Image (cartoon, rainbow, N blue to C red; front, side, top):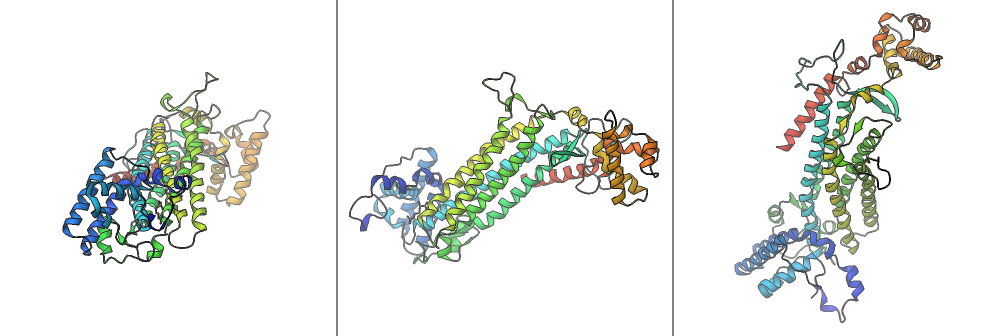
Length: 485
Ligand code: ARG
């Protein structure tokens, strides 16, 4: 049984049948297909197409079908071309010929677009929770990197200055990089949180996308609209959509939401890849900033000493396929005229695959991040005095000299340290030598080479000072608790 055999004299070629069949992919939307049909049955009843008894019989049958799907008892048969056919075939077996009235005024074109959107409306919150979990892991690590996190109080009270004698203990600091070259010292907590914000944007993007997914195609027919006098606004509401689509030609062809979803997934993948790349670097012996827990590392079949960051490499690697799914779907859509074309059947596999990939990576990455041990002494040791050269230039700015000049003077001081017979730190250059570079230097110049002093100066909103990071931490925690509830 196909839904379309009437005008054909021979059966479809077997291999063509296999090519055409979408059941292996779209059976994933079984529940959504039944829910769409339940709503349509009610719509047909409201339009006077189904009698009370017919509607009740169809609703009863569909609920049985749904139960079979939920319990895993549903049995597909070889003639099930797609999930829509399978549901109607089973409904017919259960309730008889009345089932044949369900497809009145409906097409698989508006049906499949409805199922797909319904499915996505369920998938977005799942992704969101997985993202929240990863964000929480980052926040926990940021808190670990601050000795005694205290609630931020406006005006800065309650946040002790980490500088000065004996202060800053337990506060993890590290080199910040640009061009992967040592640049300026930063708080480790600031680094962890730098990976929180991209995920927050990803979540905002998914939420924003929801509004465009939540448009109901059902009631558009094959392309021209439905002759059934159905209240589409009511239909939309009953299925949890925000509103019905406004143009039937567009609504059976619109897959913008699928492309956007894949963009969101790809962007998440890019963010995960960036984070993963840094973890891979920082766990190398050369950096030695982080150690992974054994539970989230793997070994080598050949080299007994190896402890590999596979989890992060896979996150980095899988983001490539996410990007591929986005470009693949866009290329498919680009060639199409308007309304439904069978090419559109190719929309679901990449969306499902991208979802599965993210739902596989995100929890593992969160677990791996939570169990990372930071090595503050290694990070501290990687900060060398030249990273405070900017602070040296700023010191002279404080003495009234224009930054353009102080930049050059500080550059000369860096040169002097590097050129010394035994390479020396900038704090080892004598005061006389500093004064020969610029007479404005005084004995207090040596304070600038304390990385904590450098960090504490960056106290404007978004900077790396303890107070600014504490404020940031409070902000992101508020975001998380607000959105979790
Ligand atoms: N399996 C199809 C898809 O996924 C359902 C719609 C089929 N429509 C049609 N006119 N053959 O797009």
